[in-house]
Image (cartoon, rainbow, N blue to C red; front, side, top):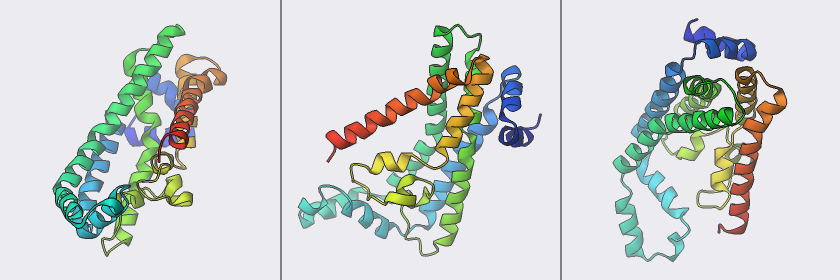
Length: 234
């Protein structure tokens, strides 16, 4: 089955798609497409952004900015170069998705071993890569944002227009809730549901099993993150 046809089947009939994926696991297409397009998007972003404006926005949102002297602010501004920011972001965008999918697959493999499933690492890795493929929509919307902001005055956060922070809360960078609210998008529930379906098909267990494997750990992670932000962050 061709990869685009499979992606379409994943949208229309995920159970059947995951059954086919279990029998013939593949992962290169979603992994490469997401990583390459995300990295390319940030190269494009930094090629058109008004960097002096962006640097001022970043520095002014820092928690220590108001306490800095004029000399310290000038020094901080000099250290924040366009190339440094661009390449750190691009490298993170390129290697981040594979690392996340690898960790997911290792987690599923461990749970599978503990619950006596006959599913190998390659199969779990394929599931992790394809269940995360809907993130391509978020990347496509980044292009729309860049095209609409011809003045170049746009922050990296503003590219993530599906995040809860951009849609609802609008807390600035440096705020204790910024990281959490920026990490959750309206695509997440769909991706989580898709992963539950995949785990159910791969394991041949119940929907409850899929929820316990996928949703419960995520709920604990986000609950821990929220607790940390509320109690310790400033």
